[in-house]
Length: 277
Image 1 (cartoon, one colour):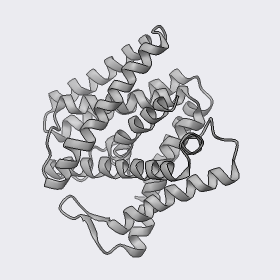
Image 2 (cartoon, one colour):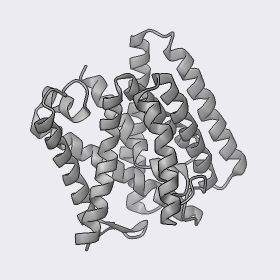
Image 3 (cartoon, rainbow, N blue to C red):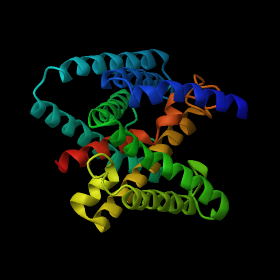
Image 4 (cartoon, rainbow, N blue to C red):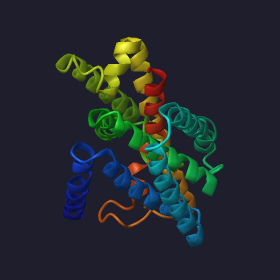
């Protein structure tokens, strides 16, 4: 299993890293659109409908392709306004219905329209962040990655108090604190080691515009959003009675399993950057 996980991760990195760092932005747009379309299929599968899965997958692919064409021809103001509205709608779901679902332990509003909204918002954010620069995209996604890694090790070392035992028994409050601490430490390290990164790295731009205290609070909120996305997907799987959202990634499960924490967080990062312009 470990070897399988490593091999899958290496293949993914061989595709994703060049798409982000060295290829034109539209290449990353297509690669990420494929990922999100597969995630859409898996979202529909968790709701129990194969036909709905294909419809959601197709809707994401078609709307994404349409957006790519529109993005190259629309005025920048029109693009910014539409993207901000989409990001805000996604965040509104996560901060209301998403949180209520987790508190109650019962999925609410997790239908096809919701899947289309949050997955489309995530893909648009991933593409728009890449247009702002590879470093901006990677630094935004790094919030999720570092929070997850910090939570894993802190949870294993100190985890005592369960975060949501009815949804994901392995997660603890200590893990959440460890994940948040890791994100703040990373941001501080970037400021110290790369003081001129203010225009290219998310945390540095936040600090340059808002100062450290408010920026730290925002980074904590973004790390919290990643936890909400992770738990919500766990809730969907719990109701579907499955361990993984799919099996397309050997050793890792489905695409949705790998990007669940990115889904609410990336629109939040993009909306912040739009507000700071």
